[in-house]
Length: 210
Ligand SMILES: C[S@@+](CC[C@H](N)C(=O)[O-])C[C@H]1O[C@@H](n2cnc3c(N)ncnc32)[C@H](O)[C@@H]1O
Image 1 (tube, rainbow, N blue to C red):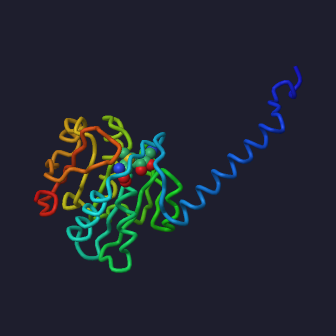
Image 2 (cartoon, rainbow, N blue to C red; image 1 turned 180 degrees about the vertical axis):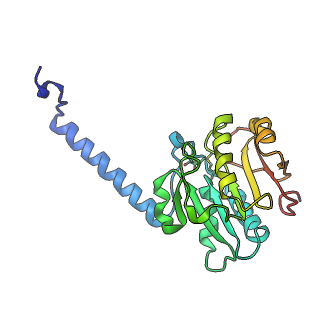
Image 3 (cartoon, protein in one colour; image 1 turned 45 degrees about the vertical axis):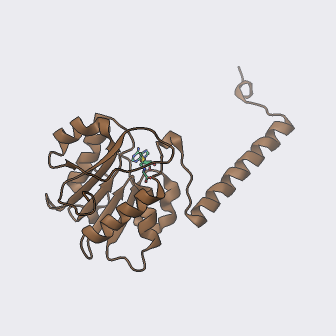
């Protein structure tokens, strides 16, 4: 059998349709990067928060993280988007840890992060982070275990504040892995998701318990 037997041959029409599709996709990605309006990709488990949720959490970080503190939004791009919007007046120093490279539109504030390689984080941030706000991609024990390894590497110590938003189904694993967490009164909302989501944190937050 020759190599050419394996080749797929497309008709002119199919080739043109494919070219058109690729061009449109490239234009969409370019527009998203310019406007920072990134569409959800469900294959990456992306379900963006309702606007009021993102605004509220960004306010929590701005007011409760402490002046000049280092804040990491881990797999929470909607929260980072609000922080970025107010960056001129912000008192915190925030970073986005994300797997989706479309978020590289945030320049040197974007840190590529894959929970499968939990120790692969910028070394400048190791043991330097004051506040971590996270929403891991999968509702599994394994995912939370790996993300917990990242938290332990990044945090300054037990005083580092944590805000975890995830499915309530994860609570038994959270209690085992992060025993200081308490369930918040505040609940994150998603416009297109019916799952039972909740928030928990490891400190006496005014804004998360009011
Ligand atoms: C459940 S969503 C949380 C997003 C949040 N609701 C928001 O609006 O910002 C999970 C996030 O994890 C990211 N993600 C997907 N695969 C990942 C991986 N392997 N490692 C780390 N993060 C990943 C997705 O891109 C998405 O931003």
